[in-house]
Image 1 (tube, one colour):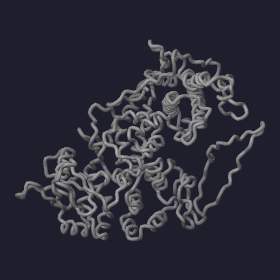
Image 2 (cartoon, rainbow, N blue to C red; image 1 turned 90 degrees about the horizontal axis):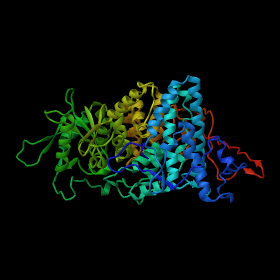
Image 3 (tube, rainbow, N blue to C red; image 1 turned 90 degrees about the vertical axis):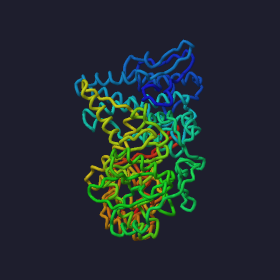
Image 4 (cartoon, rainbow, N blue to C red; image 1 turned 30 degrees about the horizontal axis):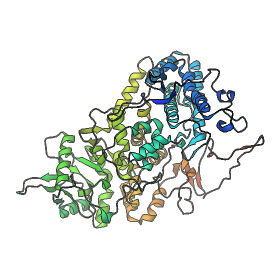
Length: 623
């Protein structure tokens, strides 16, 4: 759909809806359109497509006319000629080429109205969109697509993209009148299934099913569709993965192999001087790496220098499964060292000696006691680094020249680096983070500055509020990280962190509590204590530090800690929930306050012979 940002690889598409297709929307009222034309069962409220009253094609026309054409008419007015076009070959297509222009016109109209009138119009738009989303949630869920669903995959996709763009603009406009007017925070829209052509197309393009689910859940339909248009240069094999788990980056230490720049390269490894590394770690120093060319050898040696004030350095952030780690020694191939030195020099923009820190060389492998000393201090490394440079295999194979900010942002969101827990820790503790691409770096703060400036420019123009739906959804994780860094309230900070843990993975589960403790600013002494106890006891000991937890944890269908007083909590914190409300831990368990509880829908009809049945929830008290 053409309202989405452009990509450097594929063009957005128009959807063909038929040959000489004519809509049947009668403009006589949105809410009762389906009832008027017999498409809704008065008793059950279900779609009545297979009743025999009309054929499938006719029912499809009426349903699509209501969901697409009717939504455009009711919210944007008589502008249908800009959305439904008859081509010279007889095909009828729907297009959103003019959607953003009409959204801005709508925004100017809303801004010119008295507040009460503006709110009334926005509430009307919300009512229309709620009905569209409700029908999608009922009949086109991720685990169930109704036999009564008459729309084709392309029709379903076009409806979802249109509704999401309209809803994003509605929320943006409503926010001008205060946060309480922006409508429902959560309609559980992630439960809407991706149209099968989009889902299958992404799988055929090599996408991981877990990654597809992450995109749908975290970013929404528009950003997922936009992501599907991007050519991805470096994909792993995901034939063993499922929606719930990606196994492509599993990394058994006994078979781990450090990679060279080229598969055919056979250059030798250069090892960091162990005695120097050991003495620095035992003294509580941060060992910085510098390549030394003073010897007669044609390849460099590694020298370690202690960090001290004024000695700027670049901290390298990478994903171990991408091949820059070493499970046996503190060494890297010469080719990798030369590349890192070159990238560090370009990032630091300094002509003096280049210092960098990378865990492969600066964190001792053995003995475990020495390794723990390095991990205890790892938070300070990223806090003191002048910059953090991200090296991700997919980003290193992608270019930023000719790409929009949205494309660059989405590529970073899709990278393996964004799926790891340690890299989240590094992002949270860093002052300035840069992502390395094939043709340059991109600073993370540029995203926030660009989209914030864009929003301010819109608001400064006739009080216009307009948000690009892809940018608004895709920037969410970076905004959460930014808020976590600035948050001073302990309970809210805890909830924000738990939200950010969603879709993050670890190669070693024992590191989870250390990462979380560092991100929450727990004292170094406490982190040291966590590292000193057995892995299986770390999570309860860590959780015992706090009295508040995100309320949503109580309602997740996930494995729980098998310990009295803790059964309300998850075994792994990386199964997050997007919520910032908190509950209080007491000796009786977790106490939460909820305005309401949204029950999962059922496939069974709650109507029979004209009688309505009610669900009575059975509440289990967990201690």
